[in-house]
Image (cartoon, rainbow, N blue to C red):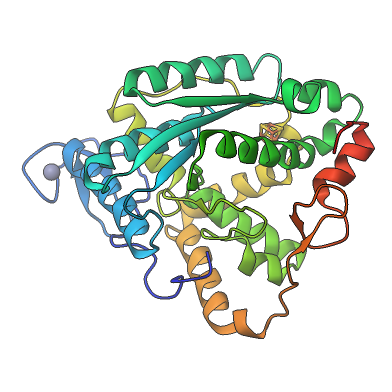
Length: 328
Ligand code: SF4
Ligand code: ZN
């Protein structure tokens, strides 16, 4: 997100998990038993205050970054995994305070055997429980085959291939549902990992561009309401609601550079609470001081499909050629 990215990142401080000591202390805000210790502020929080803290921070992120306007139809990218489950639950609970806003879940079936079946089942149960309409898009229908089939012999490229195809599938689902904003479950860890990965790649323009309000190439604005909530906090939030989805990991995740960065940052965060937040603050400072000086390539249109892209041919069309997918 470029606009409104300077200044404080959240209304409240993010929490960093640590085990509650043997003699369980009381909540710092009431006399209830603490379930969580915020290692940055030193506060202990009971169940109710922890849940309220998470929801108020998401509300503040949405408000301060003007993510959702009255009357918006928000599509939730719902994989059925932990982050998107938490996103759907939190937005559903905040819905009464969002003026005239509607929610629709968009679920993509990439076709990953032994993994996607479970997460899709979990997503289907969730939308039924919360009575939220759902649009489903499958790679087989959209691209003619499963991700598993496309990846035969190319497993190390899995996440790149998956990311490009899934982006198109999400846009197709969003257009089918007629939504005005597309919300994804990216959390603080994801955002910090992206900052670090862009630094590792030496890609400053992408570091500035790849942010919460980045909508380049997405004709439907994309929003990340959970961007200031850590993965651990979301896990605790789900557990406190009895909604922890016990799901397998994607079998291709082992190939991702992101996994190495994730492990490294998680280790640093335990030793040095606030590391991930500091990475986001660094990014905000770079945006504030350098964004105007960067040469931003004008958005062009793909010669083959007409979608927005930075070169002559978009990534999707190049990938389709490589994978032998027709009808770009
Ligand atoms: Fe796709 Fe990689 Fe995520 Fe698996 S881990 S769903 S291949 S992006
Ligand atoms: Zn309390």
